[in-house]
Image (cartoon, rainbow, N blue to C red):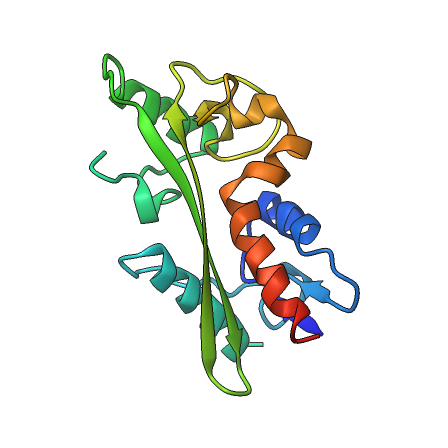
Length: 180
């Protein structure tokens, strides 16, 4: 079975490739295929699920109130480090630092038009400072529940077992294993 995973983010590509490592399953990413390498899907849905489905359908067809939320990459222009620093500044003095990571994966079958949604969550809190060199995105400022270090400090081995992405893509792998 061949599966196109609709993300251009190379950090996510590495994690997903590891999470979906399954005999008989070949993964492709948009930047690996000329027809989809430059495709930039407008993620204008109001939920993670809507955006996941928009991306899944587009790539298949073409070859602090909840913030940052669904716009986690777009809520502030700049690098991951820039977004992390702005978020830390906005939370300065705030006692309630509860947060969660959410991944919504959508597997779209172009043969029957069916879109299947898989959700993974990782509860935790926002740290007081950025710490750790492993991971990407908000990993240096996110402390998972029942941990004392940020995801970036815990390392990739731990992250791929507890992360929101791991929870969602483990479900994807189980679903796909019944179809291979």
